Structures are given as structure tokens and as C-alpha cells.
Image 1 (cartoon, rainbow over the protein chains, first blue to last red):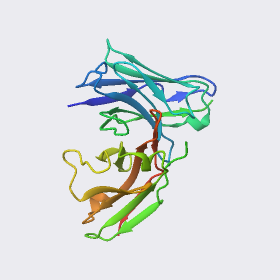
Image 2 (image 1 turned 45 degrees about the vertical axis):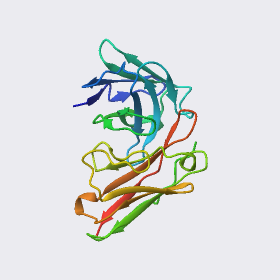
Image 3 (image 1 turned 135 degrees about the vertical axis):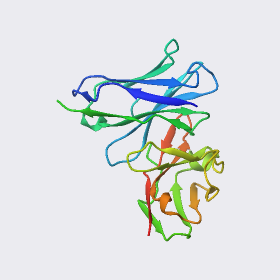
Length: 119
Length: 110
């Protein structure tokens, strides 16, 4: 059974960097068979794709966030990480990691972690 | 990259069918069949219910079906049940290795 779990600080100050980790069990993040993605959802609003990474190489980002985002993989710990620079209150959201068996299909999701940007 | 357009709400009585539209452009929804749909209940993570326009993952009832006409994809829930009350989101490949979601539709079972 594939499971994903997000972790990281729940509160980040404006202008700082948001850093989250997604720990995966039941599948290998280094496999070339899957993409591993991040999606966010501001309170009371819809879903926004942040980006994803192909386990065997290659990262792809939402053009609107591309200048601030970095997604990377830690194969030794079977984790996928998200960094978002220069955050503002608009980055306050529930952040989800998810597996893509192929493009535009996210079949396994983590429970999500709420990140609030405030001083 | 604007969000795909979904109606904010839809409703139906138990046993009826409800259809949710998802309108994009010839660069995303209209360009291929990489369209997926998600059900999200309050306080929960989204759940994949349709992938590649029409495919239902294992365990998803066959009451859920997907289709497309031109630049508009649709999700139909037949035989509406109380448990189908949730938010529904469409998602499409948008070219250039990017993905775009719809704004979401809240389905109410009357």
C-alpha cells in the first residue's frame, strides 16, 4: 500500500522559505515509473498544481511559481522535498504531495499539511 | 495559465444524475485525453475518481463516468447518493509538462 506523509513547519514568516518533506512508503521515489508532485489549496479555495519531479530525473513547475520553487528527491530516505522562496500571505495553504502514475493523474495523496505565512 | 472553468455548484436528488462541466482551451482539455477528476470531502485529501478522461480506478463506483466534447470535459454522477456530496475538481495536462486544475464544483444532494 502506497502512503505519503507531508511534514514541515506549520508557520513561516513572510519573505522566508517554506520547506516541506513528503515521506513515501510502499513505492520508490527513484523509480522512473512515477512522477511525484506537490499541490496546494488555500483555505476555502481550489487546488493549484505547484510542480512535480520524475523519480529518474526531471522537474517541472507551475509557470506562475517557477521562479520561487524547487522540488528535489532524497533517495536515501525515500522522500520528496518542496522549497518555496520569498513567501507571502498568499502562500498560506494546505500543501499536499501526491504520486502521478502518468501526467495529470494523481492517484495517491498525503493527508496534507497546513502552512500559514504570518509574522 | 488560468484555471479550467467549472460551475461553482451543482445539485440533484438521490437517484438522479448530475453532470459537471470543465471548460478549457484547445491547448489543454481539447488537445488530448489527459483529463482527470477528483472528489474531495470536507477536511480530506482529494481522491482520484477518473483518469485519462474515462478510466475509473479500482474501487470507484461505475456511477462515475467521464466524457469530453471539444474543449469541455464532463463528469457525470448517475444514481446520486448522499455520500456523493463533496467538491469535485477537474485536472488537465496543459502542455509543456504542466498541469492545471479547475476551480471546483460543490455538489449538493438534495
